[in-house]
Image (cartoon, rainbow, N blue to C red; front, side, top):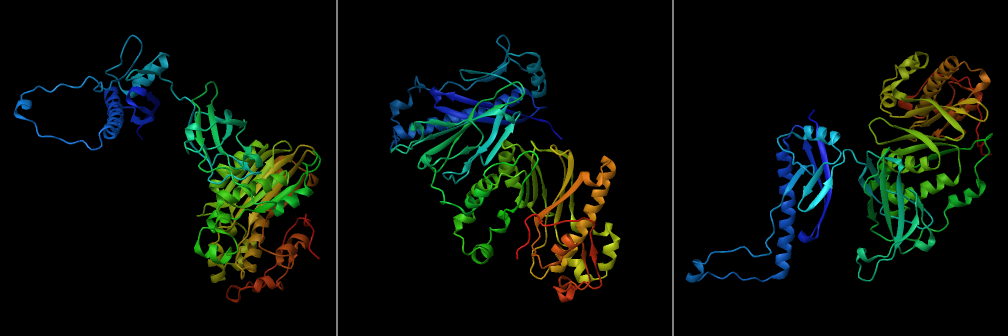
Length: 510
């Protein structure tokens, strides 16, 4: 495709009352004169717009009078304060460039360090691929005693780790003029744990983008609303009393959590039926994600297996925050939907080895020992093949014990009449896990005691159902009631086995 060059500069010209960032996206094949003319026209439009506003303020009710005969013979002269022509050029101190394309200009810039863009009376030294904050946004809700961080932070030619951040707080004056706020610095990290004393204050976030060798211009953004009081003590804060600190290196803690994807709360049915007991603001993701982040961090886990994770929440919230807390992870969206699974691990305890992501309905025919027993059941096959249930496998090496851990994460089908679907999904998942487990042992030359299996997820099940029996007893027979949860799709004469001796890490309710 056609190559393009993005040109960006911040023009502050008090004489013309301009304070604006200009952005241009030009073809590299374009003649430089054409590019400069487009820039000149855009700047001229801005100047004329400012002058028009200035004129309308000076004489809002001006009256145009018909000229007298004597006046018709008078030569019109421009007033002394008429705007001077807009000039835009590119070159060095000695020479203006012309007769070249934008691509050739880029070569010249690479060869000559002091190339300038001159606009009106201002000179801009041209820097190729300078670090910049391309986009930044703050969440609409900021609560005391919860973490705040950019809802969007898109950097060009910069990295999150090499950039610098600052948070400020200030009170909006009676004039409601944000430019008059007296700012006080409160934090120098990407995330800020908002304090109770910040209630009523506006927050400002500043980012100075940094790359390998250069630093770009600082971008700042002001929160639209002031900090609000939090919801008071949350139930999870009581549970946090059981996890006051991280575990020592020879132990690890696992957290499995369904976040409730925003995708499933944004409908009339969910708001009035499924979650009718929730106030509308409590379903908004901008509000909920603050509680979710605080809850997850408060468990001080070492491995996090999450379900119903929106792609946007993973990219903009979970990954940036958890990376600050020494976690790494990956996301597996379900088929044809924006939510899925996410697995994170503490990089101080575990080394990442590999990952395997599958959609269960897409691998069933790879296991004829089970598939052939159910493939003749048309209604069952149609229903299970439509499911987008995902299975995420992450192989880690536990540094302290020098052993390997295969972490499985899934979210099984939810429908009340689908115990048989869930049991089959789990059966196929275990077949896939067994195959991967055996492959890993061969490829890494691991003994049986050197590789453990950890299976987490939202199974939409209870201990009385077949999934728990298959996990703990390693066998489910054809007499299991789950097989008959839907008479039209009933599964008959099928039994399941799995080879791993497993137990529930949380025990079993009495």
